Amino acid sequence: MATLVLDNGAYTAKIGYSQETVRVIPNCQFRSKTSRLKTFTANQLEEIKDPSGLFYILPFQKGYLVNWDVQRKVWDHLFGKEMFKVDFADTSIVITEPYFNFSSIQESMNEILFEEYQFQSVLRINSGSLSAHHYFHTKPSELCCLVVDSSFSFTHIAPYCRSKKLHEGIRRINVGGKLLTNHLKEIISYRQLHVMDETHVINQVKEDVCYVSQDFLRDMELAQMKGEENTLMRDYVLPDFSSIRKGFCKPREEMVLSGKYKTGEQILRLANERFAVPEMLFHPSDIGIQEMGIPEAIVHSVQALPEEMQPHFYQNIVLTGGNTLFPGFRERLEAELRSLVPAHLPVSILLPSNPVCYSWEGGKLLAHSPDYEEMVVTREEYEENGHCVCEDKFDI
Image 1 (cartoon, rainbow, N blue to C red):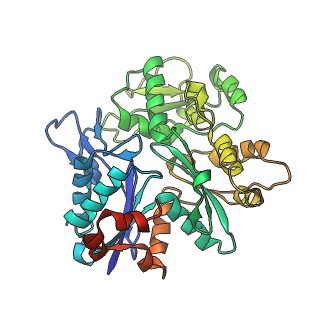
Image 2 (spheres, one colour):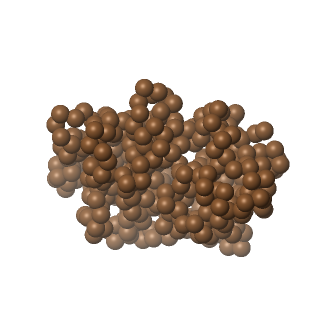
Image 3 (cartoon, one colour):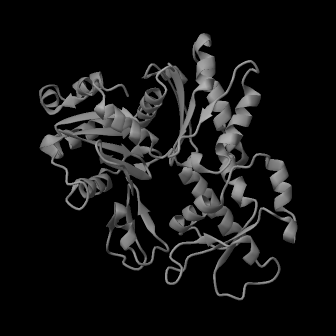
């Protein structure tokens, strides 16, 4: 029997069979300005000739799966003959969902997986649990780990001990990649160019030029310098989707510091935006979101746990999710935690080589583990007992 692992994120779905490698695919539908009537699903994004003013239709709102029609379309595409050619009668699926998911969403998901698609068996699990499984697999001597998952909708901090999650230590910060992109859209629209409709393009800008500052005030001063002294300023060439398919940063030596460019390219000049946007992960209160930053939330989470376990969590922090890819993220988090954690406790933070697919890899390992058969709910069990058998078996 084949096992399909699907880390069903609000921005991308990480999907693949447990014997194969992972593919990262947008978990949404798109409409473009040029072809108004046609809807593109998931990785059909590449077929859109002119992705300016791209309109996203997302199955998730505020991190929870609410738009089932869109999710069905994406799944039909993923499971169908163009992509994974799933033979449902002979396939088991591992699928992720957020912490503290609503039971109505869980029931709908059970119904769709078992009754519509008719998978042989299902394991619903938090992506953090898969990350923890991956971590314990690579470091078998460790008993505790703290998963910091900073992704599209929000950032979760979840402590695990011997693969069991400790509910009293789970924290959520409502700051994720979506908020960062939206904030960058707002400040660019306010300062230079109206880009409120250009989510796709500005998301690319964020990924290309933003970084986490190690000393915010010093970088702020640098960003105000004129001319050559301003080492932070970057000129970003926006795509026009005819000759330039994808935006890029102008090399330092080609930047025109005074006056205008002779070439006809559209340029965004970015200075303090580069680090002020990711700063929201550390200080959401800067833009009026009354929540803790990640370092503070980690300490808050660990302090809710038994005292003798606390040192083990600080030594085994693992970062997952797309926001951890900002340059300087790990270093800044380590520096801030160091100042918050008691001096005699060591702090150690692991940033995996691919933090986005880390939990998918954990699902792949879990699918091969001897305990897997005990964890899943089979179709027979579901048909006999309904939703309650899932509630009993899945630790959500």
